[in-house]
Image 1 (cartoon, one colour):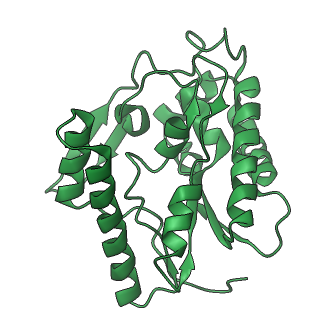
Image 2: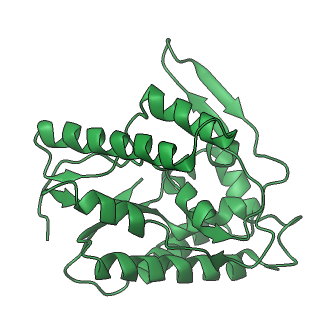
Length: 242
């Protein structure tokens, strides 16, 4: 077990060449093979950067992800159409250079079919990372209740009549993912749960309560689902990104 450490929360800034390559592959300007090579290089550089500053725990910088949680929507069918705004909507406050940004939640956002796994979410990420470092590789996964954002009372009931029925399937998928990562040798897994502190924001709290759970239920149910995903792996360190 890790007693004390310093590590990055997960994501590092994507280099310009990776951002361009992601745009190019989306419109067919480059092949998937060429894109994968650029992606691999970005991961290699992220690992080298963390090692160079002496970190004992390293991530792949989440270079392969559009957003820190999008490996779920890429690996699992049923989510319907989405773009980056699905993960970024809300009010963002920056400094004098970056300014503020406000994005509305996409109107058509919502799970529309039963969730079905095409592949594991992060197994490939972990396999590549563990081969590139002698440090402790950390893999990050989204907290189950974060996916409340993808349940819609308008679009989701044919597949999932209630939020609880949807999140039950999310928990099952995430629990299987943790088991697979542990089988592959993962000893440090992080659950990303930035929605917990965001419940302090009145606008965000109103949205989450509108999904069907009272505020006083959120932490109890959310933590219950987190614990179900964590399971019983005493030799694995689990961290949280809040």
